[in-house]
Length: 428
Ligand SMILES: *Cc1c(COP(=O)(O)O)cnc(C)c1O
Image 1 (cartoon, rainbow, N blue to C red):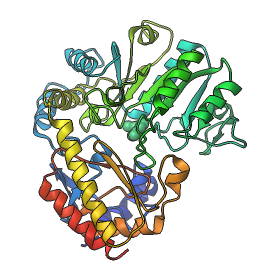
Image 2 (image 1 turned 180 degrees about the vertical axis):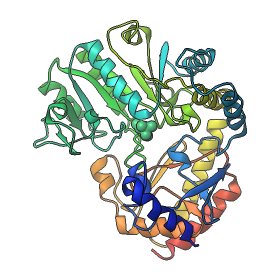
Image 3 (image 1 turned 90 degrees about the vertical axis):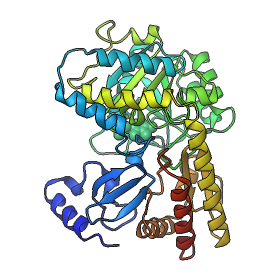
Image 4 (image 1 turned 45 degrees about the vertical axis):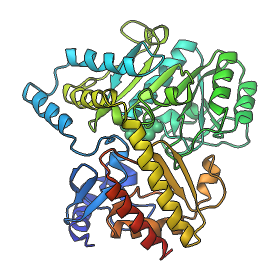
């Protein structure tokens, strides 16, 4: 394949955009080479500026669960745009999507829309802190909750201590209120509660981690967190920006039958437009401005184009009883195919999967937390990534990312992908 036009565009972009991209992972730093520039996409396929066609397993990092340029979304956005693109006033559309979301997701009474997953998670912890009148939060190493200061934290010194900034610009003052825990390690979380009695406002977690590859919660782990929160008067925040409306209509809460106190959304809920949201039951949500004292706002929040897009996707999900079964079946089929091809070449790997989220790790040991995810052989991953790209299969340009399966994928596409994986496996 040729990437000539993409190379030119990247060189041009680098002159005026830091690193040539508006979000770092797009720059291919982890895999090397030049990022391909998207020109258009339809269904399961994405086409680049050089005219190459790829089967897309990124799907805009999750939102395109029904495929690219999904017709009802495209039409709804066009029709809304003709009537004005932003008002800074409430619209009936906002109530319509809010009602639908509240009806689909268990255990929430009200939802507030924002413009990104980052904003949703940032606002959720402010709300949790305001509501509990406590400062500290627990997050898990390797979980991503957007790029707000409180989450850009790495392990400090010693196991039971506060975190340290993992980006310049994040202050020590902020870092000291974020406690870092090990995913799937309930003992570790218990120790943090013991060492910080009465100080923890909330635990925030990706109920299925999707930002260190896909890591499912081990049996009893989420229940354990629920119990710890209940015993300590802390809130449990499910960051369902990735899992919401993807693992089930009601997300991970429904799939695992665990109640979260606050739930964050993004990605699918916006149908490919910039949207995030956070939701909870009344007693918590009523703590938000203008009803309550916790401030949160947004000039473009509830934007009509974004709400129109999100509404079409939620309606489609709500009205399709077979969707999650189809997604599950397709992803299981892909998993089986990948296993056969990698086994045939005696490649050492681990595959993790929950529903339509799947990741391939080039390490034999189980991948259950950030440390085990980091052990994967990155050189093999790079070859795997570039090999697949050459064969017209676009997976995320980082070993720490999940693949997202879309309903637009046919079994023919999956077979083509598995064939490509077989050919690439032969070269690893
Ligand atoms: C993508 C993601 C975010 C951040 O959302 P943005 O819209 O990129 O700000 C937060 N949490 C999780 C779990 C995510 O996957």
